[in-house]
Figure 1 (cartoon, rainbow, N blue to C red):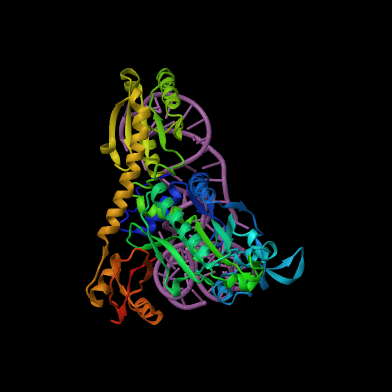
Figure 2: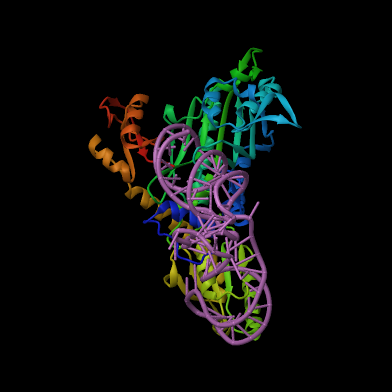
Amino acid sequence: MSEERLPSRSENFSEWYNQVVLRAELADYAPVRGCMVARPYGWALWENVQAALDRRFKATGHVNAAFPLFIPMSFLEKEKEHVEGFSPELAVVTIGGGEQLEEPLIIRPTSETIIGHMYAKWVKSYRDLPILINLWNSVVRWEMRTKLFLRTTEFYWQEGHTAHATPEEAQNETIQMLNVYADFAEAEAGVPVVKGRKSDSEKFAGALRSYTIEAMMGDKRALQAGTSHNLGDNFARAFGIRYLDRENTLQYCWTTSWGLSWRFIGAIIMVHGDDKGLVLPPRLAPYQVVIVPIYKNDDERAKVQEVVERVRSGLSEFRVHTDWRDGLTPGFKFNDWEMRGVPLRLEIGPRDVAAGTAALARRDVPGREGKRTVQLDRLPTLVGETLKDIHRSLFEQASEFRRANTRQPHDYEEFKQLVQDGWVDAWWCGEAACESQIKDETKSTTRCIPLEQPGGSGMCIHCGKPATERAIFGRSY
RNA sequence: CGGGGUGUAGCGCAGCUGGAAGCGCACCGCGUUUGGGACGCGGGGGUCGGCGGUUCAAGUCCGCCCACCCCGACCA
């Protein structure tokens, strides 16, 4: 609960973020380095993220399964780039049941290797393909610097793992799931994203190609909000995932993996939140409507309660919560629910009981400005319409913010300046050395090479070499 | 891992030159309140991060260790 004002987003964005997470009771620091507890309100939000994604996974033919938390160390070592990428951040178990283990077990930082082992066992024939499995689990990566939701030592996510007969199928799957993520982000969370390909230095350890959805946060930094990887035949060769094709020839499979973590909750907070706290997108909000009853005595309370119950039953298709907490003033509750980002608030007191009305306040228009008096019988349709309108408005605001802060510099001098405070969209040669120089000089990196390209060609913004693609550059989380 | 900072009640902090552990908020009880962050009275709550040292006496001085936070190099 909040007793003081939040730091404003403009004065200290990072501290504003931490305070919103804590005060909205989404999460709290755990007594383990870099780890956090997802509190019920935060977990409810994650469950809604899960449900929205899971629906889409099922609709595209995927099924869920569970794989072990532990992975033999030797598995990781089978794919060269993979082990190089992950070994600095592994948690390793060396003792079990009081005995030194013969082979250390790592706690999964991701499951490609153990998936590879099992798929090799399961796939014999082209008839076994494709395999389309998704895992809802948590993984551990020993990060240097952590931040609630955005980068925690253990994090919850989903990881999809598929195996296909042809490289074309694998590529189609990779793009299909990127599209699923983008659709989820925009249609459910109201978070506009750019779909793009990662540069070689930013791609997943062991992948042929990585794709990402990138979102702009309220401080104009970029957040990788979901990734989809075409793993080529790298893991199939490392683990021997092979099948007999129709001509009875042994072939390697082509695999993909794709993941989205609770980091996405961080994106929701940083894209929509304001100086009063969290602003949740209606389709994912744990509570879409909160009712604050107002009364001075038992008699009033009884009358108000009767109306509240009637209103509730009329709103049964929405997620509604009534705040009956005793000993708190309505004013306190208004601020409290604004902190927690509930899209719509209904205030029902004696005056409303007499007049057959309620006060309806929308969160995306904070304070008294977003409040109006409405007739009770209009509520069911009005609530539905207003929630839709809030979603549309949040998405539009975020899109406009991103548009206004994505610039196209004419030369590298301008680039260096612009990239400090927003995204830059520029021709880029695609070479790693060039990218790394830009990073050293500006602290910004290529976020992605957008799938949507204008066509034509130009000169690399940094080195001046011929370039056929434009890239998004920015500072990132 | 480098730089900086902080560890005293659940949270935020004060505690001077070493001499009986405090304040605000939160929490509990009672009463008055309640349409934008209420108030009064009463109450509970502490291995002062840990270990060692100096001293008649350590929250305070010294040493070592640990944890966490912030800023940089890796990442979803």
